[in-house]
Amino acid sequence: MKILIADDEKDLVFLLKMRLESVGFEIATAYDGIEALQKAHSESPDLIILDIMMPAGDGFRICEKLKSEEDTSSIPVIFLTAKTLDKDERKGLSIGAEYYFKKPFEAEDLIETINKVLKKPQQLREEIKHSKVWKLFLITDNIDVLQLLEPKLKEENFQYQIAQKREDILSKLNLFDPQLIVFDVYAKSIDALRFLEEMKDEESIKKAPFVLLAAPGDKGRLEDYKNIVQIIDIVENPYDILELIAVIKAHFK
Image 1 (tube, rainbow, N blue to C red):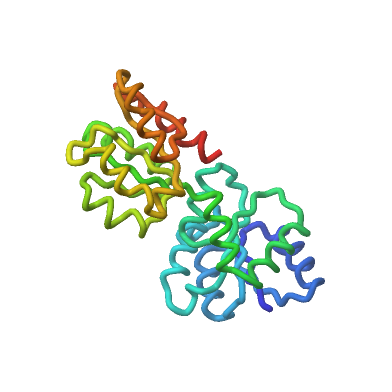
Image 2: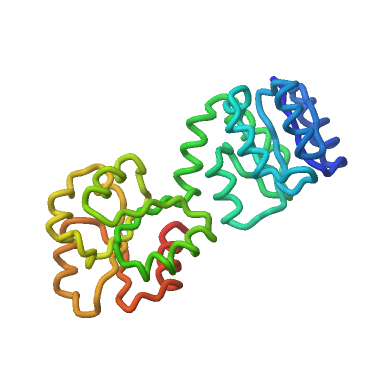
């Protein structure tokens, strides 16, 4: 099995090359983004270990490029990086990487992950993405909420879909397979209670918890919603977007 290591830290590359060769891997190396792309094509590696902060093309762009080209799209990518923020990890996983390793790291842990990726790359990718990539489905036609919330969702590297009408919900929900649904019970085109009652047996509705956007006087009606779907929290109007983001992040944490 051949592994391409792409990192501009030459001492790290040397040490990692020696360690991986000692357990039987063939190693190719690259020290910037352009060389990483060239070697990915010329060396046909079975797996790529990719740094993010490199000259001549950061790792995120390199990974996106690899995943977009036919002869490299199926090569598993493991990020190995000093970028340790959760949102960077989610971005790396969302663009197609199988795993995200943060420096400093243990060589044995990396080798174990490499073997898992090479054995069952798709299975591992799905397991990791399910736990670390935040997929949010937002049901609202409140323009003010959308204008304030969307920049925050992008900043946190959420994967998200927005539905404003009943037909949009039905067409998008099962395809997107969200991990959390934010539901505005005052969306104008939807009778919220009737809709949830009709949709409660849909697989996506059954397995995804809800955060409701509601009004302070809705306490009585909220009991009706709780009898239909799994509600983890309620954010009351007037909506504080930072509070809503905090509620959503608390669920995923």
